Picture 1 (cartoon, rainbow, N blue to C red):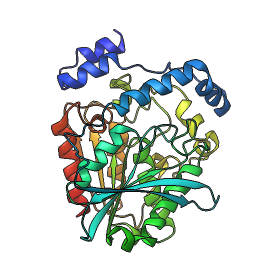
Picture 2: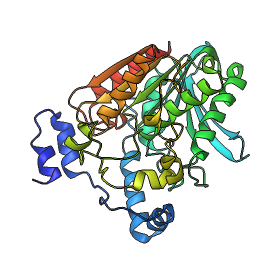
Picture 3: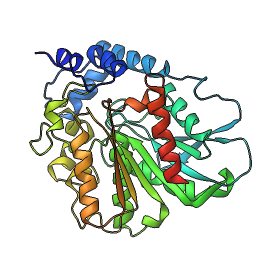
Picture 4: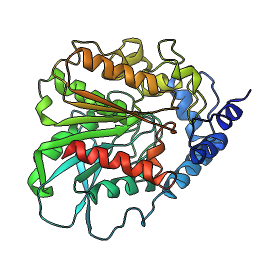
Length: 344
């Protein structure tokens, strides 16, 4: 039975999700010899066509009925990242008033390798949250393979350094943006969920966890190698939006960090000591996502380390369903409202 047929017959999936999973294009499950293979592939005519097609699909998800532009204040900024001194981009979206509000610092997905927070689905997602009373800061960090709105691409730790620098920049500008510095939540899905947890691990190492009031990781992409017998979902749902059975994820982000079992690159390697002092955390996973069980395992690690943590399992969904708002709008809205409540 093909993966598409398997998904099409899965009664757990919401019918709207099932229809997308059945026809979603997937990269072949082939290994590569090095990161350069992925850069060459992305630059090829076929790679460029695939990149443009995905961008077009995600831009089509910008639904102004769900998330009106009216009533919002939207500003764009350039941020200097440390330690490389490179420039990254941030967009701040908030209600057009002067009320001091909580902040959701959102990191886009894409396996730390691709996508951009300026794509339409992320813009819609951010406006949904902003209309519910938080200041949303979207960061475009350096991807490892395909450029975001930032032209440079670089492997770990470039993207993480950018995300940590963006958090420090927010603290430096809380008065400019009307942000309550005691209510800043870092959030992200998939690769952005990885980076969310990696920011938390970085702050814990620096004994600066108080810089955030919480971390909210959606379907975090944190294991780095699949299939994994510890995580049955990695086999059961492989092919549902994600094809994981290759070394591409680790190669894209930097095989050295994976081989070193560096938890800042792949938080699935984190230990009890790594999460000591971690900020309160929510792990939200999707029922039929191949990454479901690794997210739940990270929550269990936090629980054993006595870190305040809660989990959500969103029924009927697969990987990052919420991040395509028009598909299942009530599911998207419920998750957005949960993030806002967590930050408030």
